[in-house]
Image (cartoon, rainbow, N blue to C red; front, side):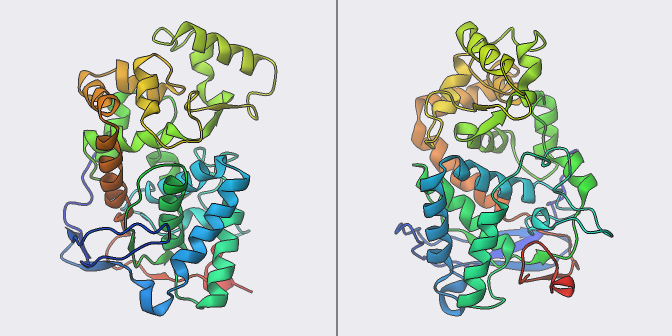
Length: 345
């Protein structure tokens, strides 16, 4: 992503403290970003009066789901990433990723980074259904994604943060933008830097947000180049052999490997420890430690100081969550996250 689209966007975050569903309180703070002199307001605790049940309902569903399927924490976190990473010039964090295809519309679910990869849509459906019963057309699907991502981190052992709210749901989606802007698993450092800078992220933001791979799994097909001699010179030999064995006996499109083979369901700094040991699963993971001295320095910092990673991850997630659609874009609060209200039956 070659240009800095956020340079003129203005998002004002209201400043007050709120206790979210996990029981943690976040100090007062505010933030402002600008686009074309228009101001979009994202608020902390927006639903305290209009829908006080909102965060507890979302947390309850995420907690229940993650207890049954720990991998779902990573899946819900990834949904938020893939929603926001569709370039802000087109969409931003607006639940465009949730829209189903129709005979006259092709959304983002069939984009290469998403097809047969994203999951958790049914969890969002369940959360939305409960929220519509509690407070109809009040909580946007985009805000659900942002809150569920935070709760997934908390329930996996990471630090929580106060989520900015007030996003609107898009009326459209861009399959092309999803294909072009979501970083691929074989990306080198230069490509990753370009993808992240295009959304206004720093080099540190890129390394920090990559740490989301401390939980979750990936299909063998996404790192096949690592197994076939293409990009394995920096891999731990025992790790390589274990992956070759895993992926050689079954369908590479369905077999899954842990992104973090040490603590796969725990949100911690082990991801970065693995990179220094040559045990990064994806090319785009391992290059952070072996492809650039500056990224390796940040990796080393997070190995040495886990709290620095947790704090930086919180701040980078807030930054990502503030990516918004362009000025003048029409949005709504969908009744059904899979379809715009105009076509909701």
